[in-house]
Amino acid sequence: MKEQLKSQQNMAVVEVECQLADTTQRLLLEVTALRAKLTEMHDDKAHSEKAARARLKDDYEKLIRGLFDAVFQLSHRFDEYRLSANHAASYAVVDVLT
Image (cartoon, rainbow, N blue to C red):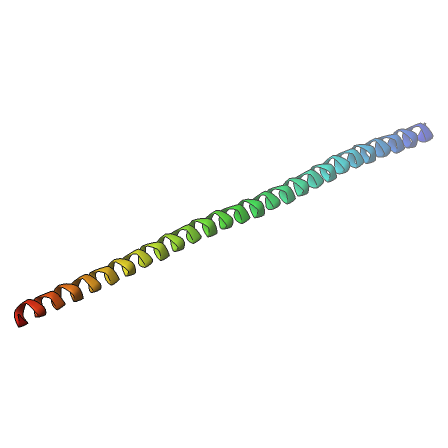
């Protein structure tokens, strides 16, 4: 009878240990899956940030090119205006002298 009781206790201990092992294994698998998901999300974030920086750089370069073109056009227009004003002044001086 004592042996039977001890045997049942041993079986109960073995069953609890098996349940604990199964639970531990499930938790380890879940932690591993969560780590993989976290790594994937980190990689996605890094990729998104890289893409955003590339878009921002492209937009910035377009703006700088547009600004350069506008400055060049204004410079050209000022040169034309200066030449036109010089010609007009020269003609006015010639008209006054004659």
